[in-house]
Amino acid sequence: MMIINDAEEDFLHRVTNLKVQQKFRLKPTQTILLSFVLMIGLGTLLLMLPVSTTNGAGLPMIDALFVSTSASCVTGLTVVDVKNDLSFFGKCVMLMLIQVGGLGIMTLATMAVHAMGYRFRLKQSLVLQESLNQSGRAGLFGLIRRMIIYTLVVEGFFALLLTWHFYPEFGLAAVGYGIFHAVSAFCNAGFDLFGNYDSLCQRPDDIFLMAGIGLPIILGGIGFTVMYDVLHAGGWRKYSLHTKIVLVSTLILIIGGTLLIWGIETGNSHTIGEMPLGQQIAHAAFMSVSCRTAGFNSFDLAQCTQITKLVMIILMFIGASPLSTGGGIKGTTFFVIMRSVWAVFRGESELTVFGRAISKDLRDQAFAIFTIGTLWVVSMGILLSIIDGEVHDLEDVVFETVSAFGTVGMGIGITLSWNDWGKGLLALTMLLGRVGIMTFMLSFIRQKQSTIKHPEEDIMIG
Image (cartoon, rainbow, N blue to C red):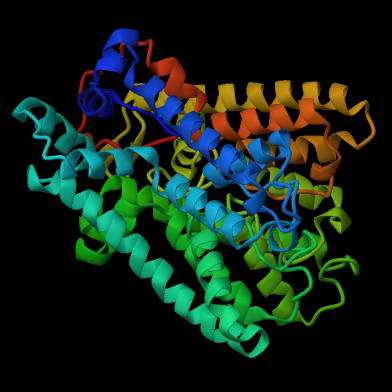
């Protein structure tokens, strides 16, 4: 989920101050939602074209809408076999939606406005500088440039690596396989070209492939500012508070998820139980990384134990980090909530992390994000169960709902069975999971700054 603070609201208002928006008085957060809706609409129309499918008929409107939403929101749930049902043109449309959805509308809007020669006034520039932790006005667009360069470098590197890996099997087609899976992995989308909705399940011995997909998932999921901080700050002491929290929470979730999945599934012969120990750990680690927001899976989720599904639901709900290509309530949100709970039990008057105080406003936002996210998932789970007519187990319906809300895309195998109403609700859940329910709500709320008691440093949450 994305949280738009006052600085970003002011920035987006300047960026989107067009006549049509003045006429309808769109707020910046509403503009973000509208931008995603328009992108989804464009993708839907393109996927409905006869040229987009191998049978020359185009996708039905509801299926095109569902797939376009899933790609734009970098989710990965699909009601079509991307490899066999979509043509080369259809796959290119998917790739475009994934890339644009992963980078974000704000990034592309900033690039477009900068290309048109728009100049920010000093007040707006200074506010945005503080929001993005930049030292000068040039840093505003410098951040955007670095995000683009970082994306191209990471995706390019892993595209080459995967192309080399796929070449013996696919020949020249390996180039397309390499590019598609590198972009899908870095953008935490989870779409693949292996066919039959199997993801990586038919390649259980391909540890290299799991590493080649798992690493870009991590790099895309920690966020652009964190990666820049790691490369340029010069050590742990100089990292921003946001970077420290992201790195710690990411490490805890990956290791904790790996140990839990391995410990539970090691006795399950239908998943990893019959594999050698090293291979078991590799699969558990890959699933721990992927189920937080990417959606690739290396073994059949329908064969998992109920406890493993619960662990995955928790990881999917938490998700990745702010200003990343992933979804969920975000690891920083979860970290702040857990630290706040611990502070309550210890009777601490202030919430401090690594020598910095976390403001009450940020704590309140973290709890609000968690609460609203939980209520949304529960509500959608109930509605989908009613629509489903209790054909599927409740745990599978909840799994699918959280997968959509966290923009993960992992499925138990029931995605294809939803009727039009079910597909519509899941598409709406994917959209709100990517844009963020709080984004819409905060557009109508004027936030107040809390009094500083300790040296504070803002972090991005949600």
